[in-house]
Image (tube, rainbow, N blue to C red; front, side, top):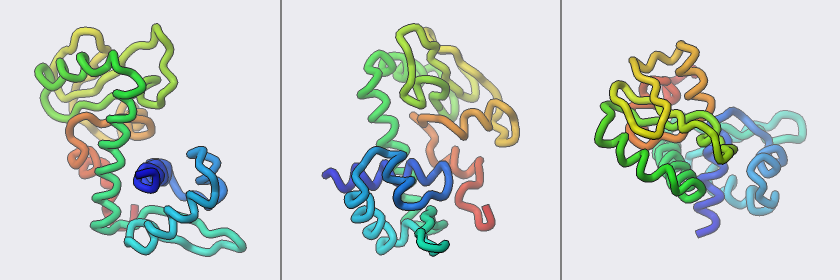
Length: 174
């Protein structure tokens, strides 16, 4: 159980960019030996790539089918983790499923798990209004300022595959 949780945390961190082993362990707050065990398993499973740079192994996500499935699972894990931390979000997200078309993405302070009691709940969806949330609507264009903010820090409740298709994350050369 813990290794799968560690795997998800590692994948989520590597979505932000390449890391070396110690930096990865520090960023996710998991002991280095546990991170190394998970990383070795993910490399063997065709999820991660490791390149030697000096004495360090630089880790990144592969553009493989296995990696894609781990990324999708990690996004669902992140959504569950967010709902666990902020139970008040559940009814708002449920309303969003009724009111919104397209992707439903939480961004802002709740998405990075740093929300305060009076923090706004920021949601993105193609169209619709949700009571209790600050909803941004419109076409998701990866080069827009809003999309760049969302890409950097998000929790996806609907449309995980669409999000990664639109951002081109798994395209070669990215």
